[in-house]
Each structure stands twice: as structure tokens, then as C-alpha cells.
Image 1: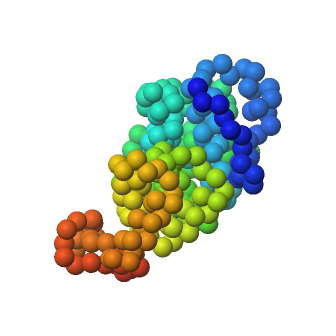
Image 2: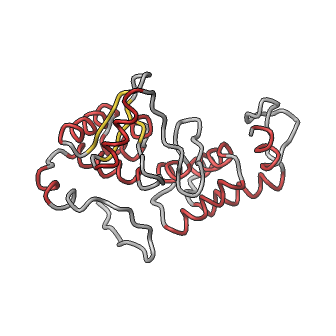
Image 3: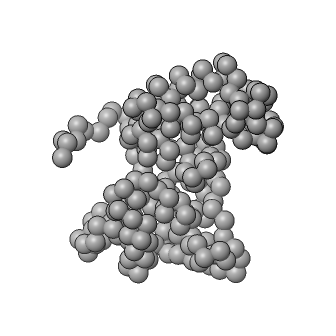
Length: 225
């Protein structure tokens, strides 16, 4: 095991209920439950508003959880244990997926409001309505799953990049960095800058392809908005 080098100066912190890391942590013995619970609080910290919730599909597609627990079934089991313990609340949607809330007054109120209608993933993400890529991951998850841990500086650069480039570009640039064994944001950003400068090719349906028509990122965003 590689020794952890320590937390960088100025890194972004997320709120975690004090009870979770005091009395509750003594009771939680299952590794899947504690990892799913902590990762849930990471995701919920990305959302603004009172009625905050996380769709089960977000958690089941979280590559950090998949890699650390080994399977989607383990994620499901860990979430189920968190709900049974009462740390989290859940409600089933019409499509069979679940929506999870913090078990606090706001979460209990939100789940009561949602009991008679289909639930949607809360769209009020910090700073932007971050879209999801073709594999269901948002820009932060794409980076963490393929490049490495987020830092405050990288988080800011990712937010800036999302306002300039389509998410498909960012996803493809990250994939290129992995394929070339150059896992760094510096490499990804240079690829994006080159594509913007040269005009990345898209098909007439707005999807990546070899159509001779070329669009800039700004034109692509207008075309698909």
C-alpha cells in the first residue's frame, strides 16, 4: 500500500454529520455500508437547496464505489444497510430505481412531499447544472474515476471547462489521456484546447463522428440546446 502523502493546502471540505463520525461509526462494522454512506455525503455536498436527494443510478455508476467494493450488488447492499440503520431514507421511483435522502428533518419532509409523485434527480448542482456523460457520470466523477483525486484548483478548472466545452469533448479527452497513459488535467486541457482551435468534428445529429461538417464548442452547444 502506498503511503498517503497528506491533504493539500486549501482543499475543499464537505459537511458530514458529527453523529456519523462519533457514535454511529462505532456501530457500523460493514465496509460496504460505511463506504456507501460516506460517498453519499460526498455526492449530496455537490447539491444546493433544501430538498436534496441522490438518485440510486448515480451511486451505482460511481466508479470509486464500484472499484472499492467490487460490484454493483455490494453498493446496493451497503445502501440497503444504511437505510435499515436509519442513516439514509429512500423511496422507490416508478422505474424501479431509488432516491436517497439524509435522515434529518429536511429529508423526512422532502420524502413526504415526494411520496405521491415520481422523483427526479435534484438538478440544482453547485454553480452549474452539470450534465451527465454517456455512461452517466458527471464531470467530477469522470475526473476522479479516470485521472485522480480532486483538488480545489482542479475542481475550479473542471467547472470552467464545462462552461466552454461540451461534456462529450471532455469525456473523449479524458479517455485519450488514459489511452496515452498521460493521466493529468494538463494533458486533457491541452487536448480540449487543440480541438477547440481546430474545430472538433461532429455529425449532423450532434454526435461525434467523421462528418466533414465541423463545429466549434460554442456552435455545438447552440446546436444541441
